[in-house]
Length: 132
Image 1 (cartoon, rainbow, N blue to C red):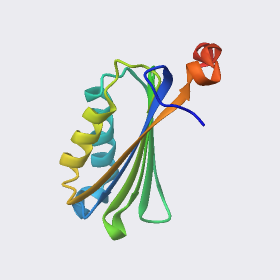
Image 2: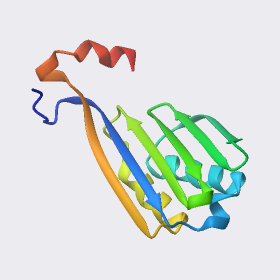
Image 3: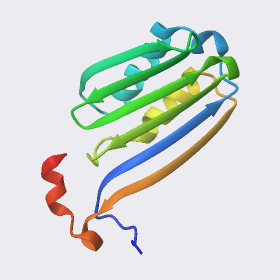
């Protein structure tokens, strides 16, 4: 069993937001702007941004950065979004992005979980840092 401590490669933050501003959740450009701003607010350097409308309503987006990736899946028909932020850079603040996303989408209900990924001391995975 892994013991979680400060010697881990990355942080994976999972955000679910509900009862959001439905008008914003239907506008791909607004979503892209909010998620891009969230990535910058977290302290990342953006490399590529991809957002697509799927299934006539849902919107999926990815912001790839030098330090992290941020993905979002929007279901405007139920005013819900699922967001994943993964970073291996300890100077990046994923919770700054969480706060901005929650505020900008005017979420009434939020759920946030954090998973510390690849405990280096326990698993001796220090060499993985070179692959990130």
